[in-house]
Length: 167
Image (cartoon, rainbow, N blue to C red):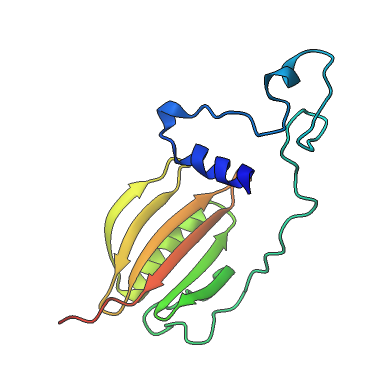
């Protein structure tokens, strides 16, 4: 628990002060000396006291829209490939579409907007070379984002929410 508390403390310090003390029992500065192979903190051969997980967590993607998804307000274009979809809570859903390249992603982005009558606001380019925007129509507000990958494929991520009732 002490190591977890220290990690939280180290992550909460502003970037200008990112240096952290070594973990208790991890060998500290003496671990850096040649010939010292002691790893009291239970580390691996690299000298790090952090161990790698034995296996990746099992994350199952849902390739179909969940029950209750607002298809009347957000119609997924025919032929689009659903990479993942789900419901985050009452009135909040997500859908991730995949395309083979940027041109297909740009065409699908435009089709989603025109098919559903969305207005696009706050459009911006992401540092990864994708794009982001807030889309809205009379029934939904959508946070949209494209995520390019190294192989050229692009994911289009849409987080949907119903607007709060007006007073």
